[in-house]
Image: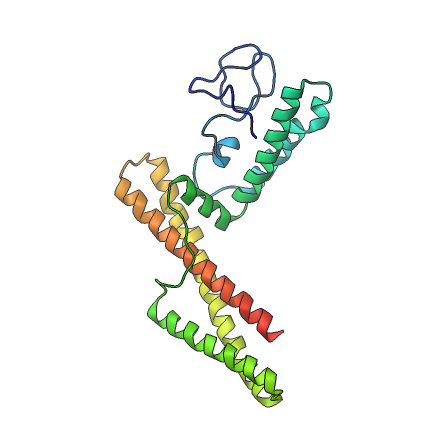
Length: 230
């Protein structure tokens, strides 16, 4: 369990009782500090909850903190400090894996904002739903052709499925472009303006949630295609 005993609204150092500024170490005595109450992956890296992140800078901070939290630096420290360093290292790794990936980063933000992501195809565009329906039929036909050993039929259906897969992959790129382009920019702009318009925030979060749902469904479908045509 992560140590948070000293994580209060006004944080003080567990060792010297000095008031703590933002950061992982006490500026007065230099002791490593436990995770703060309500600390999320963004604040752990000293970042606002923006979706556009400089990955090179993120990586630099990751390696710098990895060195500072490394257990070797706490070999002669108390058991309490050793536990804190392990907690920090674990959180650092989880935070880095999440924030460096735009999809996981968005999913995490939605969780922080209370918008749970769901998988499904309920809101897919009508034309895309029709393509998905036809593709599923083709996959069933391909399975049947394989059982019968009909090589000509297998070849024909495989070519058709490959074309459908390409369309899906293009759609995935399109959705990723919207998510990481306009939606990331709109969300970050809201934060910069310190906008308090909850309706506008919820509208953006809902659209991001919808895109993630579509992306998850389409990626699973592409994966199924790859497995079937092998």
